[in-house]
Length: 345
Image (cartoon, rainbow, N blue to C red; front, side):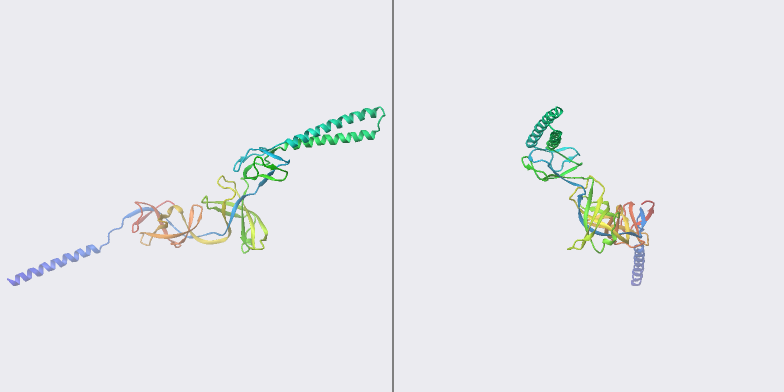
């Protein structure tokens, strides 16, 4: 009886061990990864421009200082800072009292000179006076006539007009202030003639030439514009030993004088890995991409970004030449998924 029980226990133990082994064998078999269809591309190093970056400010290349041509108190001011003006538009009116008096006096002098000339001409016809006196009277008449023209012009200067199209950027005098010739009243800038003035190290000035293309980045707009080197001043500042460079900008309604700008001068080339911006995954301030490993599986990879190049961005760290990246998966890509490539960029 004991022998029978012992055999029974041995049989049960063997069966249990066999089932356990089979179970472990099933557990060891890896589950098939989920498959996703995604767009892919292989990245390679390419040549990109090497930039030397300096800071500067946007300014108008055409700034006009408006002043009066006659003395007088400012009677009316028709513009203020920020107003757009057109050439010929009346900006300021000067009290013309003194100019009017000068004009009336000039007209009175002309009337007297004309009467004297007429009288001397009549006397000369009868031989009562010499021709020299007639000539003197004629000269006085001509001078008086010229004085009337000048006084009339001075009277017209009571209306101060804009000589150019532009924007009023500064107002130095107000209504009631005394204006005099040469004293600035307003400043006008042409917004369609913009440039960035910046200083360049002596180590790079030999690589910068008139006509070169420059990348102008305006941080406040989060945009980069294309500029052209208009002038390289061939004399360094004696203190900083840097050279003044002026970069012309195309007119833009977003760019205004006074804005801070960074100028990226192209001084050579270097190799870099670029990827389209839309393949990036941004989360909590970190940037990443999905790469496809040698087994065709998606792997999450953190990357460090560099400079933007149009709709592409430079990858400073995280990718190597020849890596394959994937994006726009269906279903959404996750690490460990099998990636089935579909066409598209």
